[in-house]
Length: 400
Image (cartoon, rainbow, N blue to C red):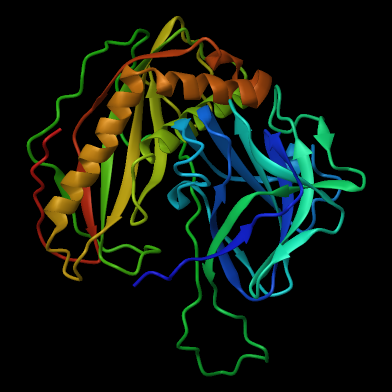
């Protein structure tokens, strides 16, 4: 069974203010696993949240991007000021953070495209419960970059995050030296999200996109090899080879810019694919495999003109509702349909294009190759399904 979620609500009485970025510190009173945040807002369109963290206090690193680690991001086309307020960022979009008693961790929540709610407070203001405390911090304006130098709250006036810190209880570290007898209590590990530079299939080279759709097969390839997974329950993992045609895009020649573009595309697709997933589902990773048939292995610098056929892979997981996973076909079909329908809708209504361009604007000059990009079309093909922790055959009836 999964651990129950706890939360610490931050709702203070200071003057209400709009913010595009807030930095604050969390101090644990016991071991907790921070999973996500719920963010209060004013409603509107075009919310693109980015979450960063660093060990210890904020200190003087509030404009130093190299001092922070990105946990993930989440995008919303529209948010109502009365419904889903605060909005809970999908935990499957963020890497969790483990804190032991007495440890302090800093967090930075930025939003590109719209602002959210913070309160002005005096220095030293905290909200707390028996598990953790949140200390008021800084207000930031991520204009051309998420770590823009414009910062408020360096004096006596601070800014308090408004919403919820959502977490579960971690395993307390031992209070004395371990004995030679192994413990029966397992440690908690987390699996970081990453973008692989190595393609799984090497396609033939082409300087122009063909635009041809991928023909889905009637029966997916099955893998039943057990693997280590953070979920306790029997889990289905599916991989969806996908493609999209991007116009107005030129691949930069700088390797730094290439890596920025590939990571930004993968993060944006991951956030969009996660929009309608429930708490048992997650996008494990998105891998950009090739552009116009040129595979990316971390060293490609070929310049591509006008438009690009981008092939990528979405890897998802869902928990079966039974220990034997005998509902696997229903679970897998529902997950596949949910993700592909949301991706197609975001391509058709232009929201995927908007999210890519807004993320490129926030990333600055390293992502300028995407500032004029537009997603023209997309398609999804052959599915590879793995039933984790079970041995047996599974043949989903793919409908998409």
